[in-house]
Each structure stands twice: as C-alpha cells, then as structure tokens.
Length: 125
Image 1 (cartoon, rainbow, N blue to C red):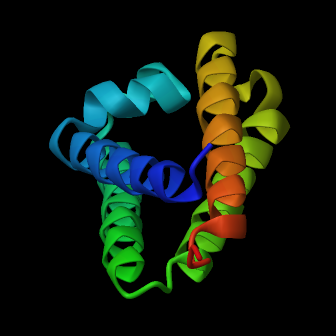
Image 2: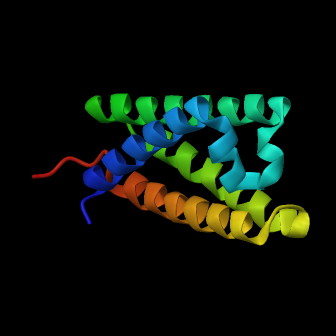
C-alpha cells in the first residue's frame, strides 16, 4: 500500500474520531467503557481524548504537506498501542464488547500508522 494514502487515512480518521468524541461524548464513550459514559466527569475526559485525536489528525495532515509526517505517525501509533494495552489490562472492568472494540480499533490504527510512518516522508525518483 501507498504510505501516503495510509497516512492520509490515519489523519482523516483521527479528525473524524476526535470530532465525534468531542460532539457525542456519551455515545462514543459508551463504545470505550460502557454505561459509565453518561457521567459528566467521564464525558469531559472523553472530550479531552477527542481533542487529542483531533489535533493529532490535523498535525499529521499538516506535517504531510511539509514532508515531515513520520514523527506524527509514530506518535499516533504509540498512542494507539497504549490505548490497546489499556483495554487489554482493563480486563473485565469494562464490558467485553467495549474491550473488543477498543482492541480492534486501537490495534488496527496502531499498525496502520506504524506502516505509514515507515515510508511517508520518502520521495519518489
């Protein structure tokens, strides 16, 4: 796959997820942690995660224009690897469906960003 297309997908997905987490923290938080997502403090934390994702997506796309996206993509990959790890370590403290969703989304995104990072800033002949 073309690393630039992968990188664009990573950036766009981060922006979409970020906006969704900011605008609909109860619904998106439910995917992550289950029923506790309706609590006001949890909604604030979910929105903060959304802000993180939004800015990582914008940063990735801006850096691509400058030919310097590798570091951004590595950061996205590491962040998602940590999200994956947190979901695994949460065990039965979050609903099984939530854990499975986070593991699949974070694991897939971590891999996509890592693959994109390896070739995104390379110039063709």
